[in-house]
Image (cartoon, rainbow, N blue to C red; front, top):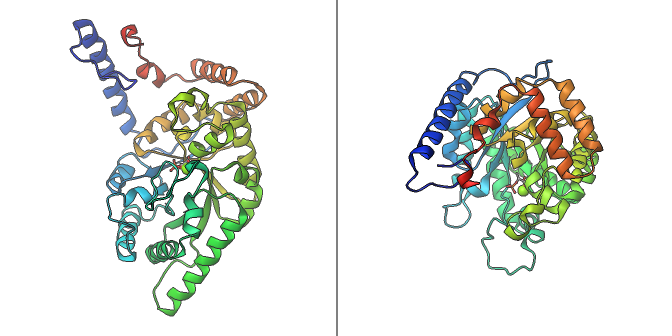
Length: 368
Ligand code: PEP
Ligand code: MG
C-alpha cells in the first residue's frame, strides 16, 4: 500500500523491497511512539500543550486511552447514532454519553449537539440550493426544539458524573448561544423538580467555524466557557470553497494567509478573556506540518483523531515555543499560501530531527 492511499496490485521486486523497508521504519517509529504515551506534550522550553481526541464511534473510546488522550475534545453525536432508526430517545442517549464519560473519568469529554445538515444528511426531506449555507447544526436544532431539549436533558443527566462539557455546532450569532444557554437553564429547572441529579456547573462552549463567529470571538469568549475552532468548515466559508467539491479542492488551502490571520485573531482575542479555553478540532490540528505554526499562534489544545496524538506529541517534544512563535510571526507577514508552505517546510528541515515526514514521503516515482 502506498502512503497516498493507492493500492499497488502485483508489485514488482523493487517495489516490494521499497515498501517493506517503509513498513519496518513505520513499525519501529510506532513502537517508539507508544513508549511516550504517558509523557506530557511539552515543548523543549517548557510550554505544555494539551492533546485530546475527536470521537465519531463509541468503539474509539478505547483508542483514547491507548494513545494517551488527555480527554475528548469533540464527540460528533450525529455520528454516534448514525445507525439508529430516527433520532435516539433520552434513554439511548443517556446510556451512550454515560458509557463514554465513565470510561474517560476523570478526564473531560466534550459532547457536541447534533450537527446535522450540510455534508451530514438531514433526517427530513428538504431540497436546499446551498445545503452548506442552509439548515445546519444549531439552526436545525433551534427549529426542532423538542429534539434539542431531549438532547440537552440527556447530556445534563449524564453530566452527573462530573466530566462532561457541552458544545454548540455551527453558531453564527450570540442570539443562538443565548437561546441554547437559556434552554439549558430551563432544563436544569425541570431536572431539579424531578430530583434528577446533574452537573450544575456544566461548561458550555461553541464551535468557531463560521466567519461571523470568528470575527466575534472576543464576545463569544465573554459568554461561554470554551471555544473550539472547526477549521474544516471555517476554511470552506472563509475561502468560499466547498470542502467536498473535487473541482475546487485545490483552492481549499489551510495555509492561506487569510486562514492563518483568522486563527491568530480568534486565539489572541479569546484566550485572554477570563482564561477561556480554546482548542482546535478540525483536520488542520492533525496536520503535522501545521503543528509548529499553530503552537506559535498561541494554540494550547489540539483535538484530533486518537491515533494522531503520538505523532503530534513527538513533534511538540522536539520544538521550542520561542522558535514556533518566530515561525508564526514570519508566516503572518507572508502574502501567499505557497510562501507559507515553503516557510513551514524549511522550519521542519532545520528544526525537527525526528523527521516523520521522511517516513511518509513516497519516493517511488512510479506512483507520483
Ligand atoms: C470542523 O468543521 O472543523 C469540525 C470539526 O466539524 P465537522 O468536521 O464535524 O463539521
Ligand atoms: Mg464543522
